[in-house]
Length: 365
Image (cartoon, rainbow, N blue to C red):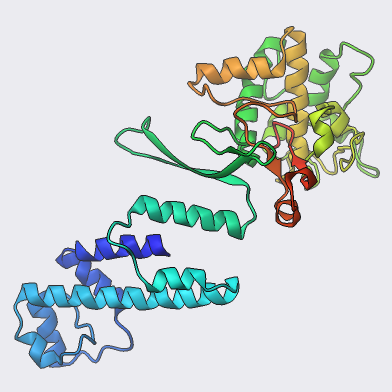
């Protein structure tokens, strides 16, 4: 809110006549009588009469244009401040603290900058949502390559390493878009397309007896539905899988990272075997399991090329100019990568030793 007020103050001071008119239309309260005097006012100044300011309408009609515009800007400023005060009061009640209000009621120091407001807001987000650290990046339309990154908090609670502009974070569900693009780029290497049936591709890539996973139908569902799933169905959440949120992998993933096949087969705690529950392509249902299957396809294709999936992904992203993007298939600590924690654990923990690590399969999050 401090940042909002700082910006609002600057914007209000620079409003032109048209913008003042629009702001007045938005800000004035109650019904407008539309009296002859008010119509005269609008013809004279180009914007509707805004009540308040301590002077009556007759006095204001005698003012010059510049004087009245300045007066209206001040009224808009006061109303903005009043509304922000209401927001502060609400926030204070919800938060149960007074520090925010004390800082706000003193308004802003003369050297308070937009960057100060942003950093203050970031620290508030860390506190409110029990986060270890965060980044916020800005870029200019004029120069998209010139990214300004702001950082707060810690990347690793154990080492005390702070978040830096080059710290890498897990991308959550945004990973699915990158995973889909990678899979589509790999399919031609095994003679497949997005229209290929998933079970056919998996069968063709089987190298070891342990490579046994195939899509199967849920009990009571026609078995042939599983064989009808195409790669395009996986990547568009239309494969016929139930809504399924893959749970995060805990501390054990640091030492023994499960494969996509283990997760899909339900061999890992918290994961259930992935099955097809209705005919593919008939309707949309968001499901992280479909991207676990896509990850398995990518892993099998990588093995057939005598490459690792992280290595293939690195080459793919580098060709796109995304040098800092990678698919981490290990839950262990990597230099420059932020460690994930459960927010509830972070709030309750007294020391970093009591925290649970949090890691997700790369195509899922």
